[in-house]
Structures are given as structure tokens and as C-alpha cells.
Image (cartoon, rainbow, N blue to C red; front, side, top):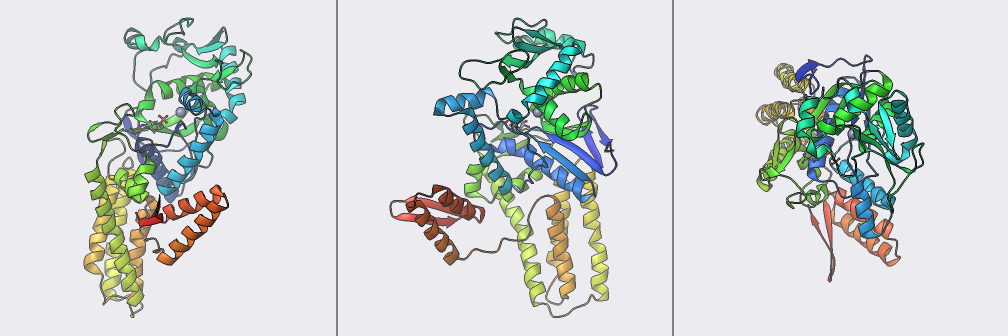
Length: 468
Ligand code: AMP
Ligand code: ZN
């Protein structure tokens, strides 16, 4: 299996540190709001990478953090007059719901930055002891120039950075020895969460969080480190500097980065107001459509989001689901059992689609070509399967579609339709819960219905519902 490594700018054969095992770290979101569909891209593509590696027999230790202490979280907490912890706890729970909807598997471990401060302090201390870091009045900086390999991931040259890097000279950080030095620990400010440290009360810089969490849950050397391409510099470059100087070992062997998601061919940004949260999309579509839409592009290509493209993704996915449905109906009705000669021959032929699928995925996770192989199989199913076929044959073709989709995290088996009466009964139960002021239960029922594709609307005339 080949992966494009940002470090070497080449597609390389993937060879894990330990045979049969993969240690993988993916930078997770900063939790101060609902995640947007840009944040969903790394979640979906690297979950697919994980699923494919598991399919190939690797045992994958997959770690993805939540950044739960950050300026944006603090700002949001102040805005609402609640604690930062309340904000992060709320949006971690919401993020997990979205992940479930997109069929993104929970990580082996989802560490929280605020729970790992002790380890970060220990790493910073080691860097100070090794002379790679220094303390100025409670702010600890990393001595960037001392790490000779700085720039190796982003392929940047230190002197270019210096001349072009005025923005790196952040105000209030004039005490740095060199403009390139970055913060490992910052002193507390009024009204902010803080922890005790040998350099005074304060909180860690963002980059050291990931270095520590990767080390604690995966070890000093890991196989894959991934995230969006905006993280290459400075975040991942700084992680490499911290980890390699502290541990004295190469950090990650393969660095994978997804390209950005744009909206209507413009950069998606909060300030332009042209972004969608995953939750908004879930009100209109099954989130599996969002997943399918993302996987139709190669993860290293920029991807454009628009209403039309989503509609067309929905229709394409529908073709797969319909083919699987039709095979189920045919198989349920089929009388003949046992494969005949012709069927055996055809089942031999369909192996070609799996081979194509694997060849595409082995080529730096080319999910677009893998999906094309699924469509070839769907076309085969629509032309080579009918009432005259045996149950066994029809089931095998169907299982093949379901199984290839499953590797991509797509469910080709349609959800059992929920009956109107069941929905009405749940709405009734929710109304009772609300009357009893049991809002937790009421919300759970709403979420349960949403997961089944039922949207509730509270109107003056009472609760109305519709199918997504
Ligand atoms: P953040 O919460 O900003 O730290 O981002 C979490 C993850 O989402 C990171 O891996 C980012 O690179 C990624 N990300 C943010 N915006 C986009 C976007 N528009 N397209 C693709 N990935 C993104
Ligand atoms: Zn990170």
C-alpha cells in the first residue's frame, strides 16, 4: 500500500514500525462550536484510511484528540457567561453525535488536552534541560534554530521564514530570543483556566498538546500523523521539533494531509459566512451522503461543496442502495438454490471489481477510483442478476456490494423503514418527558428519531414530523 508522505513529497510503500500494527494520530477539532463540514473532511478521510488498513489485517491504534483549552473556547465561555469546561464538554458531545452520523468510528483513544497537562509539563521540562527551550518571565519558548531539521516537513527554509515572517513576531512576545521561537507554555491571564507549573501558573501552547498526547497513547515513534493541510505549518512542523528534540528519535514516519473543502468555489470561512455545520447538513440529508460526497474526491485534491453537487452525490449513492435493495428482493423470492455453471463463472468474474477497488485504495487511498469500481459492480448487478438466478448467487453479489461499501464506511443496506406508529409513539413519549421536565430524555428521543431520519418541528399546533 502506497501513501503520499508530505515529509518526502513522494508516494511511499507503507511499512509499519511493528509488523501488523499501525500507530496513527489525527489532530482533532478545537471544540467551541458545532463542527463544520471542513472539519468533517479529515475525520471522514482518515477514518476511511483506518478502515482500509483494518480490512488489510492491520491492528490500528487510532488516536485523535479534542483541543479543549484555547482562546476561542475561552471567548465563547465569556460570551455565554459559563466555564470553558462547560463549552468544551457540550461541543465534544455534539461532535461525537456528528461523527456517529457520518459513521466515523470512535478513536481507540480520544484524549483531552486538559487531562494531559502533567505530561506536557514534563516534556517542556526535558526541552529546557536539553537547552531546546527557555523561560522568560513565565513564558517558555522553543529555541527553533537549535533544531537543525526545522522546516523539513513544510519544506521551508529558516532564513526565508525569517525575512518573510513578520507575522511570526506576535505582539507581546518581544521577549523571544528569535522571532522564529514559538510558545510551549504561557502565563495565565485574568479569567482564563490555568494550571500550576515550574514556570508559574498558566497553560500549554497548542503544539505541545499533540506531541504529548501522541507520545502518551502511541509512543515516541509513530507510523502515521495526519490532519488538514493548514496544519503542516506551523503546527506539525513544531510538533516534529518538540517531539524529536525531547525524545531524541524520529517522530512520525508518514505525514498525511487532506486538502481543503471550499464552498461554491470560494474558501469556506466563518467571516464570509459561507460555511455549513455538519448538523445543518444532517437536517437535509442522511450524513452518509456527506461521507459519500467527500470520498468521491481524492483526499489531496481541493473539494468544492455546493447544493447541486450534494444532490448529485445523493442520487449516485441512491443507485448503489437501490441495486442492493433489488438484489435483496430478488434473493428473497428466488427459489433455486445452488450455483449453476454460468453463475460460478460470473462470480469468478466479479472478483475483478474487488481487485480494482483494492488497487485504487493501495494507490494513496484513491477513494474516487474505488467508488468507480463499486459502480462497475452495481452495473454488473443490474445486468447480470434477475429472477432466473439462484438465491446463493444473488446473495453473493449483494454481499459483495455491501462489503466494498463497508470498507469505505458506507452502509449499502438500507435502514429498516420506521413505521409511522412507532414515530408517533416516540413523539408521545417525548411530550410526556417534557411535561415531566425531563429534558434530557426528551432530547434523547429527538436525537434517536433524527438518527432514523425523522425531523421534529415544534409548532404552535403541536409537534410535526417529516422524513429527511
Ligand atoms: P480546527 O478545529 O480548526 O483545529 O480544525 C480541525 C481539523 O479540521 C484540522 O485537521 C483542520 O486542518 C481541518 N479543517 C479545518 N477547516 C477545513 C476545511 N475547510 N477543509 C478541510 N479541512 C479543514
Ligand atoms: Zn495537532
